[in-house]
Image (cartoon, rainbow, N blue to C red; front, side):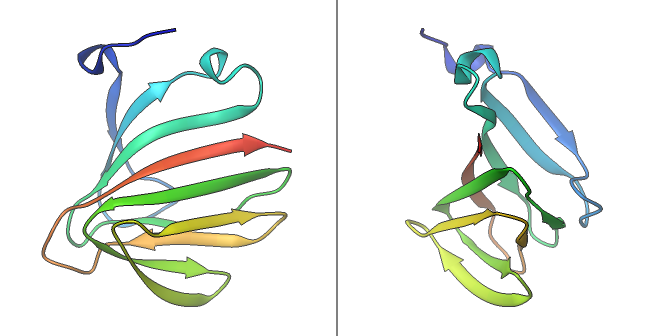
Length: 114
């Protein structure tokens, strides 16, 4: 399978009651994940915006930080993350991501099924 970047669907939305709008570029759909995942996306979080805190049950979500700095909520513990860092949440754990910096935060988000 091959998809040109310009053909990837893009959308802006409020995620999990977070602050402001977050931009998602869907890198593939569920069919493209061959039944093993729910989402694979390039996520852009502008300064002052966030993905609200939420749990993952029967699935795991990974964030791979591409650019910028974010504050990752890891089950109630705040961790500052930077480009190259990896965050994972599953098994009923709770997470969220907030951009408190003056720069754009970019990351890859992947949700895989149990």
